[in-house]
Image (tube, rainbow, N blue to C red; front, side, top):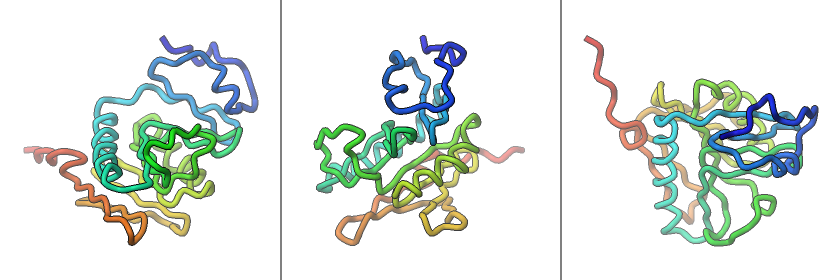
Length: 192
């Protein structure tokens, strides 16, 4: 069973070392953003299904390319006071490099699948933190709206995709294509 939030040590500033000192958790995700502890409950099955399908699509792509690691879930170590766990991250690192999280370069792509309890945090707090850290693109996946927002450091507003989206790290690698149907399943039946 996860440690109840009320039983966590009382700190005004959390560090990665503080997180590492916590006992193993059972489904609860602990992250820190600029020293603030973020507690996320276990995701829904719909959320996990979307994250799993994205992981499969990017994992299949990475198996055919050299020099890429796809991790989900995993961690992005930005500093001793910022540790975030996106649903998926694509790193420009050999697949079997076996590096510690602190040694990983910034991911080129981070994907967050929205949940009712985290949608504001993912969109308005974590997204800008990833981009400030040097992540090339952040995708915000909304399974209820059946959309993917693509954000870059230069974005004032996101590009929003409904039918499909592609990601290509550079001209030397083929693109990963994800369609609405494979990510979200068939569209819901119209109400009668």
